[in-house]
Length: 253
Ligand code: 13P
Image (cartoon, rainbow, N blue to C red):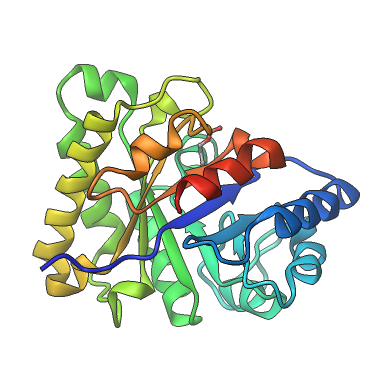
């Protein structure tokens, strides 16, 4: 039986936008996103703009997301932000295990698992990112890498329901490069991820939204979103411009 999964489009702003710019962008997206849209929409500004964007989105139905977190609740952890703090500022989602965190900040499957567990414990929904590098794809290791990241990231975690977890497949070679996985390449990995989730979590797998990320644009969004196991998009560069992000939201129906 095919579960009905609400499309989910999230904008990962990465390390972009001053406070004033963030307010303007959030307002433009709020005003431009059709009220009758099918897709759920979330914005992930940098930490510094979370409160301001939360204020802009209040009452709109658009969700706030954070780009990362630490696993402790509070304490002497200079520079870190806890899931409880993210909940307090109004976040609904937290991106965990983004390849840029793995590449530049030393995140591993073990630390990703600690973060994921802490996010769920705080009542927030993690967006767990997985994806292979160009070299791993060339070596035929894509599915093996994705399996390792998913298995390691989830660990013993059993979300209460399929709506308590989102997984984003972001092939590293497609991020910020203008190279997009073909719909077929993306669907193959998404289908594999769903089969793994079925293996790990049982029937809840049918409800879990799987986002594709990596150079999503208004030109390729519709065909990617039309794939049976692609339930949304995690958008980087194109989420910084309303004229690009709004058509991606519209492509989700
Ligand atoms: P781009 O859309 O800029 O390729 O970034 C994708 C991404 O990393 C979203 O998290």
